[in-house]
Image (cartoon, rainbow, N blue to C red; front, top):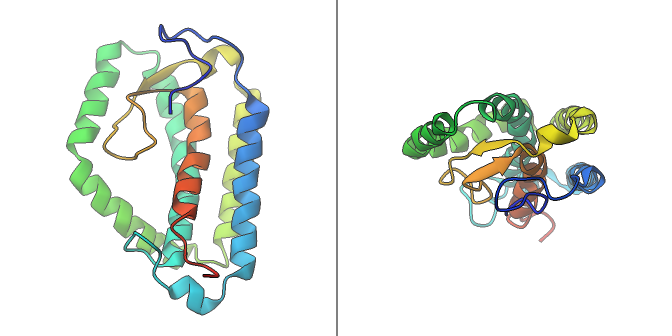
Length: 186
């Protein structure tokens, strides 16, 4: 999804709606806690719809999207200051490694759900979203329009170029996408 606050020339057209991003992050948090509170052990072990993960593994993967963004923010801040060919080359290299990435992404969520299972992932999500919200609130407006190329083969919500503001908004899109694949309560 293109960043609506950036013109085609890459100039910030208007301030980032931080409140909207924060509301979406907190909405994901609230939804996750409701899902975890209502899910039964058999539902957590049941397969999800359209993935190879169980519901519990998919829930961890949804939380993992927030964790990834926390690690991406410093990378975007650095890469946005480098010559554009560096970012393009980096994104190309990551796209070239999409096969091992997808395998690690799958296996990592299987293993992650063993460590941060339904009893622990809510706290992990809370801690991570608290950090993202604080970081977004403190970010200078001019940095939110800076960005870098992204590996579009890694995720359907990665755009060829993403601003820092778009990266902050990304985990809510990722969460909503996978939320539809859960089979809890069905």
